[in-house]
Image 1: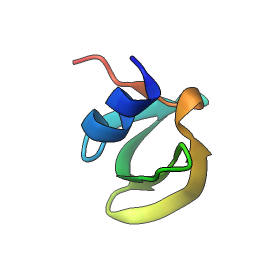
Image 2: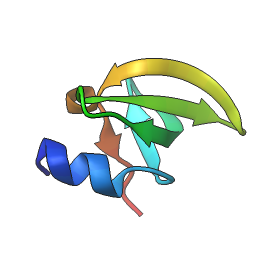
Image 3: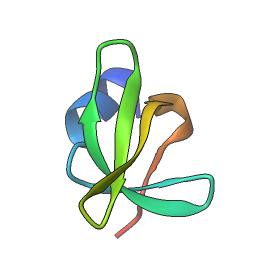
Image 4: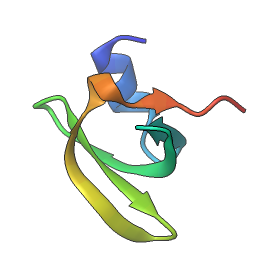
Length: 56
């Protein structure tokens, strides 16, 4: 998946980062995203290149 595809498709989906599961709560033009768990923001400015879409 390209960076542009990630920016479009990841918002609102479950993703994995460092082995943990999060919801992608926003993506930004600088190639980063925010990750939430249970409705609470956990991490900001996470590089999209490090985030993987959780397989259904």
